Image (cartoon, rainbow, N blue to C red):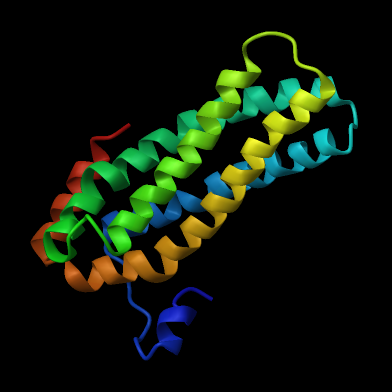
Length: 174
């Protein structure tokens, strides 16, 4: 199904270079984790074993954040600036991508800030879990935009030297 959106717009599907392929390959495991987080938020919403599920959610969100942060850094610190040279960063696709990163990260941070500081009522747990639901919706949509629009755009836009530089630089972010 990859490339369908760009193919509909008259652009043929594009084979991604190594760096872009790596960034794209990092999405499925992150999405799997997001799905698991979302399922926990549903259980909390339904007040099913709320405290146990909430504690599990905190633990899994911390793990997810540890996995998401280097991925975000590869995009924000390397890919976005490289593309920005060609299309700018103050408006357009890069500005949107950075905004969505900021939104998702702020939802996750707010959840962790609220959740790890003391005892919460069931209602407060449900409200906190809502922040993770928001991050889930933001990031699910965001990854799709990157895979179907941004990465193919980068593949067409960046020179072979820039693609090699992208690959080398993202390898350094652990």
